[in-house]
Amino acid sequence: MSDRPAGRMPLTAHRNVGRWLSEILHASVRETGVSSRIEFVRRTLHGWVREEYSETELPTAVYRNLYFPAPDTAPLPAGSGKIETISECDRLKNLVRNVTDTLVENYPQGLESEALLIALDGAKLELARIRKDIEMYGDPRKK
Figure 1 (cartoon, rainbow, N blue to C red):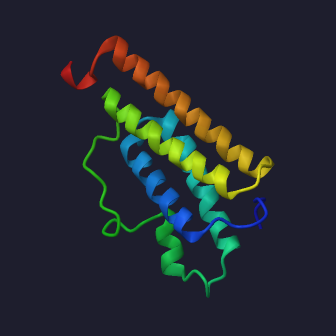
Figure 2: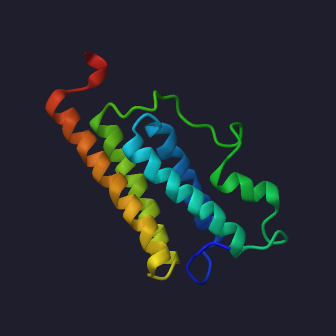
């Protein structure tokens, strides 16, 4: 049993967070400063949701798809996995903010949830660094 906050986040919130995390990961897979932090959050929440809900409440197929969707169930936009535009940085930063806000709204403050929030803050800082690089050096696709 993992260390997790008391209580449980609603399944709709888990579904949204899982979708946002998958989208962020897909867009940033070649940006390890972002993707490694997001992957930590995704794997942690994947473990927590199994402890929060019984198999009767959350069948295994549904459970797996919350944070690790099958390729045909969650089509993701085509992309290189490398963040190359300011607008992409801003879009991903908004998704990270959505995840953060949802976790803060649904889990009590404590050491368990704090680790996730720290990882998300780190992802936001990496996105800010990438954005600054693009501002300074331009769109890397045009070089």
